[in-house]
Image (cartoon, rainbow over all chains, first blue to last red):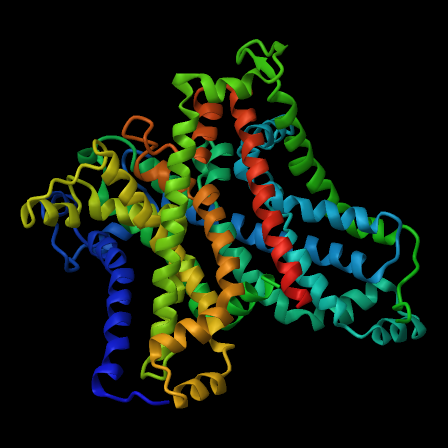
Length: 281
Length: 296
């Protein structure tokens, strides 16, 4: 290409460094606050370099939690993890089975099933809050892991992604497995699922983050502290007057909520990008 | 085309789709039907008596001063459009920069992409912490260095600005991933040919790259509007709680508050139905467009 002046070479770096700073600054502040005492945070302006209270604050956040709430971050980490894993694994299993049926089997209600799944795209939790809450409460699933996970386990995007992939699998493989006397489920378990591991990994990254970051749903159905996820806990700790909030504990908890999904994205960046851009098609 | 090989086992396919269908019916269709049904009734929240009121719940939304539905609608539109414009234009610009052959490009890309992992609620907490009038570093700086008082709990303009900034900050990484993927698919030959013909960088961008990106842009346009309208509940709930007054109560926040806090089931259901129609509209736009793209 043409323009190679010094100015043109430096300019993109200037913009990108600015952007990275805008992205990192708020997180740096939260980290700083999580290593300071509450008095230091409340003394405006708060220092913007880390202090010496890292271990102390994180230990308290993890083992005790903030004084105005009483649920420890350890419990909430566990709940967030169970919810994220439950949603990710549940979605993948349920969607794999459904996609397998829709692609490889000829049955009467095939089109009906396909369209039913498709329509769920148009019904996010946000638009059916109250009635879904009522169903969960009628089923006695308030304050349970099943209540947190089950309604989130349906995913039209996962079904579409797996369907797309299954359609590209040569049918001769399925036919050959039949001639060899394998049952359809053996074909699924031993051949099809292992072949699908790349899309499965991509879906896992996306759905784990989706599950970890759910907010409205746990807000509705968890009223007991033992079932709070990290995000709900953070919201609860921030209620009330500013001076009564234990900012250093809240900020340590915020870091704990932020790190696991961030690690997943950074470590599995390739699968993550593939998963995101593939579901578009 | 010859018919594809298919398994012929009676019953098994039904067993395979059963988990999916059970969940779809219990947690999607049944509640959606309930929302539609309840939107025609008035329920006393304690006794559970239903009185059929026809379209009154809908009428009340638009005529009842106290419900302020129209205001909530326009705030949502303003909010969603602002987030869409801000998050999309910035991320397109940055994706173009990161797509250049520069050193440390992969570092920049990772740094731009990872905030996708940040929950919308956390984005709200981060921005709240910077702009909190008592402890926020940025709020302090604005007040003591620039003489600008930041009180987003009292000032509607500031409250909306803060929400838009937090929501856009979180959405940029999503857009960045798609714009970058789109840019990487632009054939280099086109650009070099244009450069040889004497087209400058701006001209090359608007005449060649931007048109090739148009499917991505359109897809993101819809996704960002959906995000702005429906997925930003946590930010509003955390940062402003709809305030000051009801001035930042966007539609999803309002449907939650009217239902869960004020226990107005009929009104909340009517709002749910309106939201459903909006999602359906956006989904149809999306799919019509994708169909057309596949065809040409």
